[in-house]
Each structure stands twice: as C-alpha cells, then as structure tokens.
Length: 313
Ligand code: SF4
Image 1 (cartoon, rainbow, N blue to C red):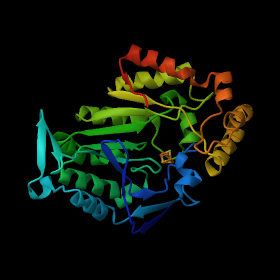
Image 2: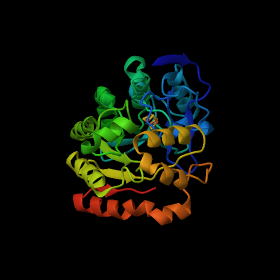
Image 3: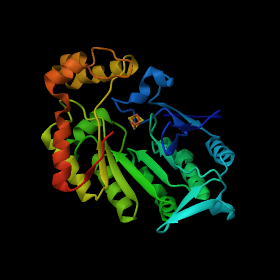
Image 4: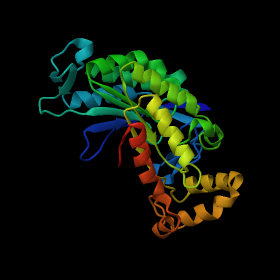
C-alpha cells in the first residue's frame, strides 16, 4: 500500500434536498472490494485505486473553513456563541439563518477506516472537528478500526448524536465469500462485534446491506443469518440494496472474478449488465426473467420476524 498526501481544493459535498453534508478525506481504498463502485471511471479515481491511497492532508482546514463560512462556531472548543436548540439532552446547532445539518463522514467511494487511517488518523481529525463544532455525525465503514474512535464518538453522541453504520452483505457462515469479494475489509464477525460494542456505548447503529449480489448473496440462508446477527447486535435498522455495475473498469474487474470463482454465473451476469447502462443499472428484461429483486419481500419478512427496522431508498 502506498500512502500519498496532497493538498485538496475541496472537501465538503452538499446534496440537494438533504439535511446532511458529506466529506471524505481519502481517494482510493485498500479494501479493494471486487464490486466497488468507486473504481468506475466517472469518479475520476486513479488506476491503482486499491493500492495507492491519496489523503487530503488539509482536510481539517477545509472542513473548518466550510463551517466558518456557513456561520458556525466551535462551541465545544472555545465555548463561543453558537446557536443551539435542545431536544431532550441533544443539542441542535444552527447558524443565524436557522440552517442545521448532519455531517456524514462516509465511504461513498473510499472507506474512511481503511488501513491507511491507522497511520494517518485523518478520519479521527474530522471527527474531532465535528465534535468541536457540535454537529451530529453519520459514519459508514467496513472496518472495525472505527472502534479506535469510540471515545470521541461517545462525546459527539452525548452532545448532538452519532450514527455508525457498517456494510454487511455476507453472513458469518459465508466468510469465504467475504474473502473473495471484500478481501481486505474486516471479517463479518468483527463487523457484528463492532456494531454490538457501539450499541452498548449508546450509539445508534445500522447495517447497509448492499450490494446484495444476485445468485451469490440473495439466498434465504445468507439473508436470514445476516438479519439474525443484526438483531443480536441490536442494530436500529437495515438498509438493503441491489447492485450496479458500470461499464469500464468496475465491470471488467467484477466479471473477471465471477469468471474465476463462479464460471457458471458469468453468462447470467453478462446478460444482466449487458445493456452497459451508464449508471450501471441492470437490464430490466433480465431482472424480470430471473426475479432478481425477489429478495426485497424476503427482507421485509425477515426484518419483521427479527424485529429490526428495514429502511428503503
Ligand atoms: S470498502 Fe467501500 S470504498 Fe472501499 S473498496 Fe470496498 S466498496 Fe469500495
């Protein structure tokens, strides 16, 4: 793994009609998941996405600059006059215009707790800034390293609220599939253990169950075991979702692995994504032919059975 630091021009991404802003101090992801959407050319990532990790070394400055420009002050650092309402014990920071939001430090196209974070500690610096400014936070990862920052997450949670999600698409019984598709991320057991520890620390937790891989991860046993483990770890919700496969690098690498480990599925996958849709959407006729989304009602039933809230997009 090569870690390369650089000074970025921008960090924070706003989304239309969203109460959250998103940021990610990394480019590239050493987890190198086979299905990773981040490899698709439209994100303009470098070719060696899975081994050369680029770090925005000025990310803390950029975040602070962004928050100051929007009229926020570091309430937990300087005890300055930031405006806040309170619901129960949580603070809702807002600026003079009444704007408020959650800060999402989340994967998107690069995991914020990938191995480089152990050395660089950039996600931790982001969290510190979130705490200083008194915002609620949302995190998404596939790595148990998130537990390193439990102290800070607890402080953020006590003040304004914190939600931590882990992505899980294979059950603990299917660790061999995790090794194929998510070779360098934490094991499935480690992820469920992390969720349990976070829950016991009072933090909201959830599972992003996506992408559910057709013919590989959508069988009853895999789905039920994941939902059961989620219930045992006391997660608040599960968000399941299907997969996309964009033409170019993402599709080439994915089909290469299918050809190697699941040659009997190669033709089906080639047909499912044979339309080369620019956003990687499946071919609808093939979706219907194979009942690809039949997992959805199953997930509704399983979430009901184990009493876990199911979210949908
Ligand atoms: S952890 Fe997420 S960002 Fe990293 S390689 Fe896997 S899918 Fe891509």
